[in-house]
Amino acid sequence: MKSIIRSLRHRNFRLYFFGQGLSVTGTWMQSVALIWLVYRLTDSKAVLGLAVFSSQILTFVVAPLAGVLADRWNRRRALIAAQALAMAQALGLAAVAYTMPEEKVDHWVEIWPILALSLFTGLVRGFEVPTRHSFIVQMLDDRKDLPNAIALNSLMVITARVIGCTLAGLLIQAIGRHGEATVLLMNGLSYSTIIVSLGMMRIVPRRREAPTEAVLAGLKQGWGYVWHKPTLRTVLLLLALTSLVAVPHSEMLPAFAKDVHLLGGGPDTLSYLKGVAAGGALLALVLLAYRRTAVPLGRILVGGGVLFGLGLIAFGAATWYCRSLPVSLAVMAWVGLAMATQMYACNTMLQTTSDENKRGRVMSFYTMAFMGVAPFGAMLMGWLAEVLDTRLAVWGPAYEGLGAPAVVAAGGAILTVGALLLGRRLPKRVRAAPPTVDGIEPAG
Image (cartoon, rainbow, N blue to C red; front, side, top):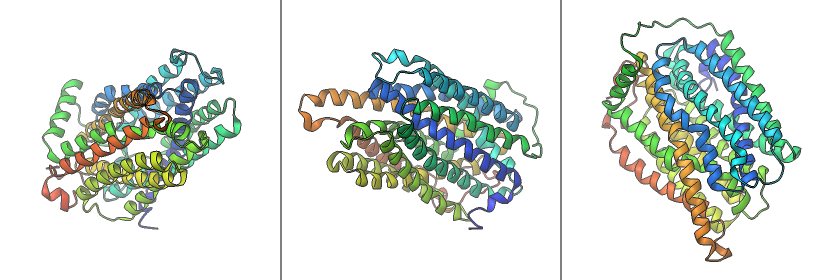
C-alpha cells in the first residue's frame, strides 16, 4: 500500500488528489446526466453523437494553443481560472436542464441551449486539461515519483468514475422529474473543492525563460518537436486512432441500455454499464500504481490497445447475441481495464520523455488526440448506428437495435489492427526499456 500511494507524501499532490477527486466525481455524474437527458428528449443516436461532438470539438481547436500558453503562464493561476469558468458553465447547464420538458421534444433544435453550453465546456476543457497534466510534476518534491503520480491521478479519476456514474444513474432514477438537472447542479457545486485545493498549495515557482518567439511560432516548434520524435509521434497517432474508433463507445451506452438489452433499461442500467467499466479500469490502475518502474511501457501500450479492441468486439457480440445484462457487464469490465491500461501508458510515455519547457505543448497534443478527436468519432458512430438501424429495420424485428453493437464492434476491430501495426513503429529500445523520469533523455 505504501508503494501504491507513495506520491501522496507530497503535500501539494495530496491536496490536488482529494480536491480533484471530489470535483471529477461531479464531472462523471454530469456525463451520465447529460447524455441520458439528450437521449431521453430526442430518442436519436445521431443527436446523441452531436451532443458529444458539441461538448468536445472546441477542445480539439484550442488545445494546441493552450499547450503553448501553459509553458508560459503560471499554471496554478490558469487552472483556478479554468475551474471557475467550468463551475459557471455547469451551474448554467443545470438551470437550463430544469426548464426542459419531461416528455420527448418534437425536434432536436429545442435542445440548442444544451448544445451551446456544451460548446463552452469544450472551450474551457481545451485550456484546462493540458495545463493540469503539465502541472502535476510541479506538485512533486521528487520527480522520480512522476510515474506513480500519473497512475494515482488516473486511479483517482477512475474511482470518481465508478462513484459518479453509479450515483448519477441511481439519483436520476430515484428523483424522476428534474433528476438530471439535480445531478448537474451537484456537479457545479463540486468545482469549489478543487478551486480551494489549488489555492492552498505551496508551489515553488518554476524557472521560466522569457519567450523569444510568437505564440504561433511556439506552436510550430512544439509540433516539430513531437513529429521528429518517433516515440511521441507513434503514441499520439495510436491515441488519436483509439479516440476516433473506440473511445466513443461510452457515448453510445444509452442506446445499449435503453434499446438493445430488452430489459426495460433506464438510467440505472446505464450507470451499471459505466460503473463496471470504471471498476475494471480501477483494478488496472491499482496494479499499475504498484509498479515502481515504467518497464516496459511500449508493450503495455500495444497490449492495452489490442485488448481494448478485442473487448469492444466482444461487447458488441455479447449485447446482441446474448442480450444478457450480466454478460455485458462482465465484458464492460474487461473493456474498462484495457482502456485504462492503454491510456496510462500513453500519458506516462508522453510526460516522462518530454522536456520541461515543452511539456505543456506535448500534453496539449495529448489532449487534442484524446479528447479532441473523440467528438468526431462520437458523431460518426451515432450517425452510422442510426443509418444501420433504419436500413436493417426492413429486415424484420429480429434486427432491431443492431446498429450500435455493429458499429462498436467494427471500431474494436479497427483498433486491434491499428495497435498492432503502430506498435511495430515504436523504437525497439522503447518496447523493452523504461524511459527516464527526469524529462531529459530525448524520446527517440
